[in-house]
Amino acid sequence: MSEPTPVASEIDGAAKLDRGGVAWSIFEGGRDPYVILMTIYIFMPYVSASMVGDPVKGQELIARFQQYAGWIVMATAPFLGASIDKLGPRKWWLASVVTLMVPLIASLWWAKPDGSGLSIIATMTIAMVANVLFAWSEVLHNSMLIRAAGLKGAHAASGLALSLGNFFSVLALGFTAWAFALPGTVDWSWVPEAPLFGLDTALHEQERVVALMAAGLLALGSIPIFLFTPDAPRTGVPVLSAFRQGAADLLGMVRTVGHFKDAAIYLASRMFFFDGMNGVLFFFGVLAVGVMKWVALDLLITGIILSIVAVGGGMV
Image (cartoon, one colour):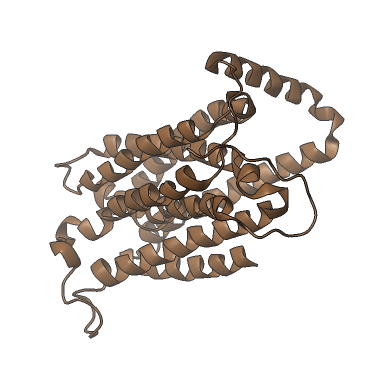
C-alpha cells in the first residue's frame, strides 16, 4: 500500500490529476458495470422474465429485495461514513468489500432459468448482499477522493470517474451484443455466426454471462487504486471505538441540523431526487421486459446509447 501524501489545501482553479487521482477514477470504471449490466439492463430483467416467468411477480420480487437492501444500507452506511475518518486507512476495508463482492457477483452465473442452479430466492439474496456491499464500497471510495486528487482536482477526478464508469459499461454492453446477442440473429460479416465460447442461448447464457463480466471488471478496476492512490494515515483508534465515536458524531449532527437550514434542505432534496432517479433506473429494464416485451438486444442497444451520452456528460 502507498504511503499517505499531504492533502492539497487549495480550493480554486483546476489541477492536473496524477496517477493517484486517475487510479481513483478507474475504480469507478470497474465498479459501474455491475449497475449497468446486472441491475438495469441485462441480469435483473432476465430474472424477472425468465427465472420468475411472470412480469408482475418478477417486479414485486425484485422490488422487495431491493427494499431489504435499502433498509440495510440506511441502517449501516451513515455509521460507516461517520466513522471513516476515525478508522484511518480505507484500503483494507475497501479491499475486504471488493473481495466479497467479486465472487458473489460471479456466482450469479449459476442462476439458471430451469432452477437447476441457484434458486430464485438464493439469486435475489446474493444480489441483495452485493447491492449492500456496493453501497459500502461507494462510501469508502468517496472518502478517498480528496487524498487521491486534492481539493483542486476533486471535480476532475469525479467527472473522469463518471465518464470511465459509463465508458467501460459501453464496452461491456457492446461486447455482449456483438459476442452473444447478435450472433444467429443477423447476417453481418463482422458478427460471429454463433455466440462466442459456445454459450447456449436456450439456457440464457448470453444474459447470465454478464455476471462473470461484471465481476471481472470490478476485480481489474480495483487494482490501480490499491497500488497508486494514497491512503489515510493510521489514527490508532480501535475499530469499535471508531464506530462508537462515529455514531455519537452522527447523532450530534442530527440534533444540530436545524441550525444549518440550507444544508438540511439540500441534503433532503438530493436524497429524494437520487432515490427517485435510482428507482427509475433500477426498474427500467424490468419494466421494459415485462410491459413492452423487449428482449436482451433491445436493452443492450438502449444501454449503449444512454451510456455513451453519460460519458459525454461526465467529461463536461
